[in-house]
Each structure stands twice: as structure tokens, then as C-alpha cells.
Picture 1 (cartoon, rainbow, N blue to C red):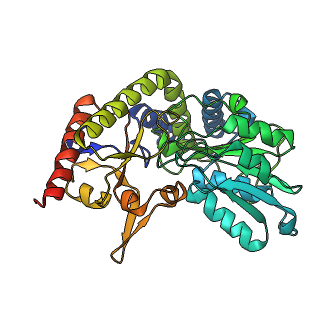
Picture 2 (picture 1 turned 90 degrees about the vertical axis):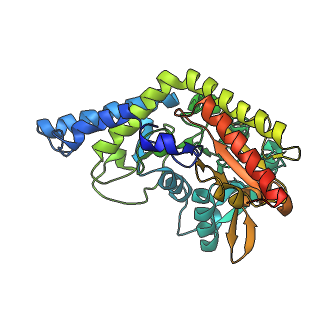
Picture 3 (picture 1 turned 90 degrees about the horizontal axis):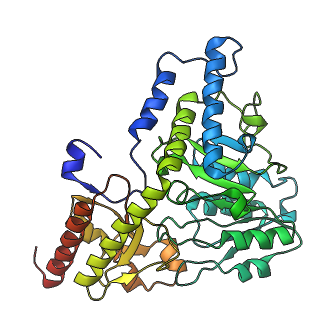
Length: 386
């Protein structure tokens, strides 16, 4: 982060969104200026725009370890998730279909699933353990003769906990069931290979990896078919019709190329920052609680709780630090996030949940300043000092 914001704020909410990388902006600029053609047009401006989209598709495919024709550009993670969940259902016979998912999924999974349930689709929502992990054996036991899809996210957005997707995929395939993973939080932060995970569908959200908002991708394994959400002229292999957005596609492609180049160093740096923040906070606050798995988690994500103090109030007193809480206050009542509730976190602990997610722009100095500020703020609040 550069300029006035980098001086005034410490941004530790990269799981919410990321700043567009300068190289990503550079890749987009030609299509905002002279390369404005419609990718479907047969003349030079059109073919150059089409080449830009296909180059971006190749860059996404390289990051995911798949073939280019298995990548579909979408408007983001929510659309990608909806495409999978709804695209496998025959709405004339919804009662013939069954979906397995989990209680810690993003609303972009849970709300479409609720919609399908109301139409008659059978849904099994699996519990998670206290570390926010799904048990593969529970997946196996939930399978029914009409099970159509298993959808479990790769990395939880609140806790950073990683799921045993490869094992879940193997279970699904043993029963002839396709597996989808929402990898919005994982892509760009860790190695994500669709063949290693053995998934049939995988969701990418551009703004989580330094691309613009409004662009995402869906990996669809060769041989898998989805009924499109919208119908039109047949772009994106007929899966997602409509004139392609060359500008945003180029941005996502560039972000994926940069992720490939930086992945190893970024992973190590984010892990160092997260571990330092965790070390300082636990040294300064004796009763701090870690939410999520202590090892199987994203390298950048730390979710902790300060028992008895609302996380939102802690951050209100620290306007320089930008992070997220695990509870929301409505009409003087505090409601835990559905993720913490699914983990069985007691309300008196969960109200104090704070999520910190580091990114490329963060420095060790920022981490140390944030830690000391949080510790001092909690101590002031407990002492009744302003």
C-alpha cells in the first residue's frame, strides 16, 4: 500500500479484499484505451481483444494446473458457486437431487443451498469440529443414492482453516459424485492444483488475489456439464454467455501470473507476519483464545478471541487498524458469526473474536505496532480507562 493510506492505516483485512496490484492495472490499461474491440468481432480490434482473453485464461489455468478450456470467466466467487450448485439440478424434478455441504461455508454457498432446499432439493449440512474442520467420514456417511454434488470450501474465510479436500474428493469419486470446492480464499495464498485436489469444480474470486472486484473464474473439469445460469450467444464455451469483459479478464490473468511468480515468497512472508502477530498477542494477553486449526490453516490468517470484550469495541478504539470481527451487534445484542457458532465457540468468547489477515503490503513493523496497540487497548478497556 502506498501514499497517504499506508501512513495512516494498517490494513490487516486481506481476506475481505486486496488492493489491485500495479502490474494488474498495467495489464488492464490497453483494454481501457485502444484495445476496445468486442472479442466476438472478426476484424483486428476484435481478434486482439479475444487474444487478450485467451491469454488471461491460460494464465489462470497455469495457476490452477488445468487446461485452458476448463476455465470459465465469471463475475466473481458468488456467481461461480451459484453456477455449480444450480447448474447440476433439474428444476423439473428437484426432489431427485441431494447436495452435501458444511456449516462453515460462505453465504455464497449457504444461501443458494437454502434457495434449492425451498424448491425441494435435499441438502445435508455437515457439522465442523472445534478447529473448523469437516470430517471426511461424515461426508461418506451423508451420501445418498441421489447425491448430486459435494461442496466443501478449501480454506475458511474467517479462521483460515484448511479442509481435507483431496480425501473428500476421493470419497466422492468412489461413489461417482462430483466435488466442488470454493477456493476463493486459498488461490493466490497457497499452492492450489486441481489435479492434486482431484476436484471437479473450483471457484476463484479475483479480488482476493490483487485483481479487481467483479471478476472471477470457475474451473470445470473436462467432461463435467453444467446448465448455464443465463442463456445468450454462447460465449465462454456456452457456459456463461454475454460479451466478455476483456479488461477484467486481463486483470485476473495478470494477478494469476504474478501469484505464480511470487507464491513461494508470499507464503513465507505472510506466515512470518502471522506468526509474529500471534506470538506478540499471546505474550501480551494471557487469556487469548485461538479460533481455528493451529497448523492446518492459511499462512496469512489469524483469528483470536478476547473473552468478555466485544471485538468491535476493541477495533473502534483503534481506527488505524483495519481488521474484522467474528460477531455483529444488532439492537444491543451480539450475534456470533455462523462459522464460530458451528465450531461451538461459547458466546462469551466469540464476542471478542478478531480476524487478522496479512498481505503483500504488510511489514513486520506494522505487525508489531498493531499487536502492541491491540494489547494496550484491551488492557485499557479492562481497567476502565478511556
